[in-house]
Image (cartoon, rainbow over all chains, first blue to last red; front, side, top):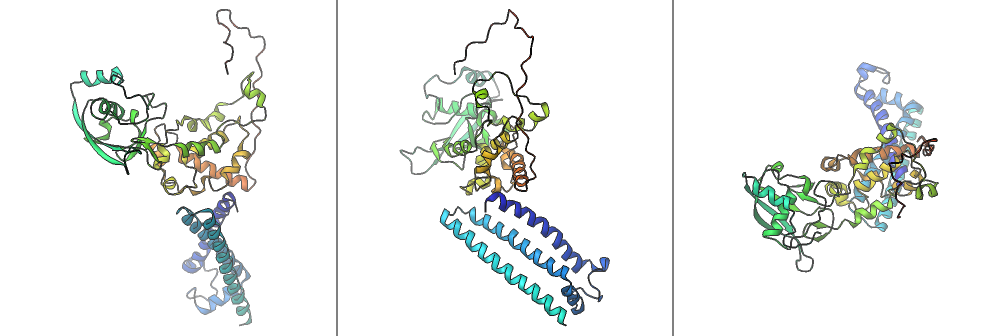
Length: 124
Length: 292
């Protein structure tokens, strides 16, 4: 990918993180005020509340989107750091390949975990 | 490099030194490097008389006249216009002609060639990488009416607002101070640096220009503005107030909007219609014939 598209996605991922991480923080730390996402009451990480959120397709999608955005944003930043060390063209290609493979693998694992948790929650 | 001849020092420098009774002494700490003789740069100290209003460049001339005849540097206009005398002076990239010794507020004047470049000799940096990167971004008006550009008949239309979009960036004198101050350019060989990117933005912002697409082939890639961390040092040291950091951020925005297909593409401005019924006054002579 060219740097123009990578940077644009980097910015978009930053906005997504801002929104979805904000949502996560709101659910976890502001629920006393919001009272929207923890139907069982008590602490947001109580079993009943976690189960309720995992049953919700909205939260499954939220986690997957947040995971994708955070991975892309972070790995692109890592790529920039490596590039600033002045690697040659071959090493740059290798870095790109490793980061893409690592990113896709982590995304696949994380997405599977979110999906599996959702499936498990619906059976309980 | 000016010739190192006795008597080459401009008279006005001597006038300043002689007529001002408030003469003090400062120590010049100068970096020397002769690629034919030295393995590495070395520092040498000199003590010279300074006076009110004396610039670092005038001090260098005095040094050359009295103590270091072989000292080499670039300088030309002595008035902050040509951009030749960019140097690293007391830890900051500055124009030697535009920096008075008094403003350094120190009895030591440390002078070195601009960092981030190879040294040709003494205080002369090799600016070739900067000018190579400058060339690559096509720093000129790109239009389809090439015949009109080569043999202009009238002017291109440009409003005051359109002029304001790039005017600040056009004050650049290519002194290299921004490149020397840039922490990214210091470590990242792929980064074009503030000066070339600012000039690319200067032409991309020009309403007469239609070259965004051509420049994008370079700017959208690794050499583009993407590795700028917005340290802002380029804008801090720029002796002409060009603000390269701003230009680079504007360029990022333009390129992001372009990727998202949200960039407004406007046609380059048309020619101004030739005024009719205007006669040249008889006391105004004809313009001389073109020589180029």
